Length: 258
Figure 1: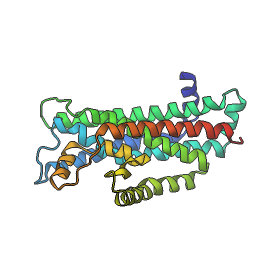
Figure 2: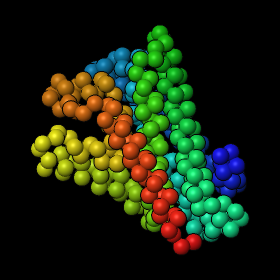
Figure 3: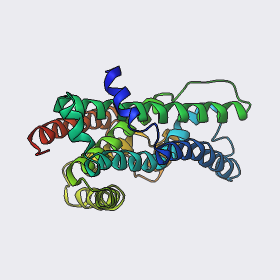
């Protein structure tokens, strides 16, 4: 596993775009969460939203909007291997096709760990800054953020592996994740009357529902827009989609003409 990761990062050690985008994600995570905390703190609706008992909920939720940067990295890095035939050279040099996909999976896990650590630090700093007592209530949202990151990047990788060209893969993935799936979710929820909010179990939506803060859920209950499905249902769905995504990647790459 370490060898496979070393191969992946050797490809990126001179890639300035990769380093810049990683730095941009880290800086943006701190910056966006600081802005969000200032807006929420000054809101007449809630002057205590960013206390330590709440940061574990709000910071992962806000940070999830920046995963688009890591998806961009994943797609660019994967598609560049087709452009420069690096994937073919890896197989010629001795990597099996399964090892090649495994290396990509490990790379995505490392990106997810990096994003989760940055999010954790951002939440902890925000909590300390509120001068409230340290609390880990709601810490499960940090884990949910990790799951969502892997799910989001896994589908970005699948799009890149299928389309092979950076610009079309980025465009189609972002259109699907930001527009098409949201439309599908609302349409499914509208036409299926037997099970409420079934559309929430679409591939990307399922992990997004994991990060909805408890305070927001409570507000939705007041206006009768509560979600009938428990968190563990979305967690299981997200894990199943991740597994299906990688199974598809393994199968497709084994059958692919290099």
